[in-house]
Amino acid sequence: MTTTSPERPALTAPDPVARAARGRLRLGAGRQLHAGPVTYTVLIVAGVLSILPLYWTLVAASHTQDDVLSLSPPLVPGGLLFHNLSTAWQQANLGKAIVNSVVVSGCITAATLFFCTLAGYSFAKMRFRGRGWLMTAVIATLTIPPQLSVVPLFMMMSDIGWGGHLESVIFPTLVSAFGVFFMRQYLLEALPYELIEAAKVDGANNFRIVRSIVLPVARPAMMVLGMLTFVQAWNDFFWPYLALSQQNPTLQVALGQLSASYTPDQSIVMAGALISALPLLVVFVVFGKQIVGGIMSGAVKG
Image (tube, rainbow, N blue to C red; front, side, top):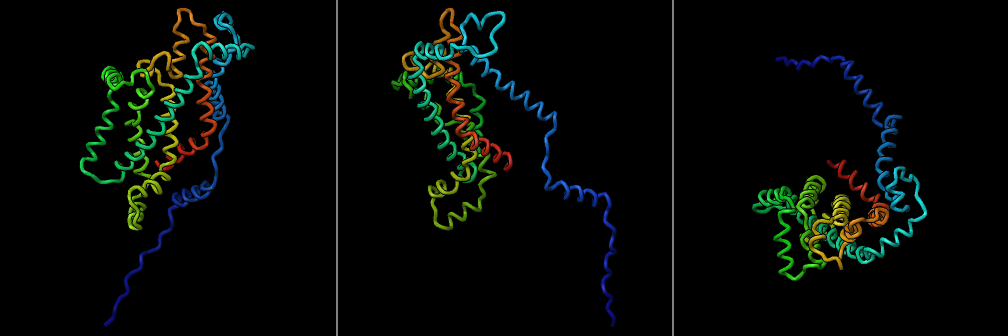
């Protein structure tokens, strides 16, 4: 009895098109992309347009109102900058306003990062009944205009006795629906289930998992969310203007008082606006590397 060996498939020549494509991929794998003149031109124009409003604020804050409103306004800073800054500081009591804004923005940012990270982790990795419906309800709140809640919120703060106090601005914004959704989406991709299960096998409870695993993994997203929350709380004007008194304002409310007169001095208003922008610039200079790193980390993971 003889056995026949199975026929071997015939060897085919590799496709020249596919071979050339693989060769191009290998050649370009370690090669970096270089920007051309058009790219640099676009970046320079975008940078100039971004800096132009801040530069004009500096120019207007260092001249008189007559110079700013003249037919040929100045294009370079003048010598009245410190005088106008001092005048704006005294007229609007900006010292107390800055302290109030730092307290309000700092408390809102810290609370938002804490609660939104915990809620985002719960919605992303924990199994419980009604999780989908609750997440849908959270997202649905983003469609409600904040102006609709002003009257009941104002009445609630008055009944509690917080009218005119910073608590009336801090507590209604301790958690944001956007922050919960943002952290959930990030942790869905960045935090694998296997890492959580390994921690549970080692005997870690939920508190230990959040402290040792969730918070380090979520740090890039927390930096981005913290920046967005701080900027929004710092620049918020509508609700603080309604909830606080003129004797206890935030910085944006105090700046509104500078331009509330019948004939406001534009140079003084610009000086106050310059003071308002400086803390945000300091925050970005100090934490800029971490913020950009968080944005790039989220882009790579997405």
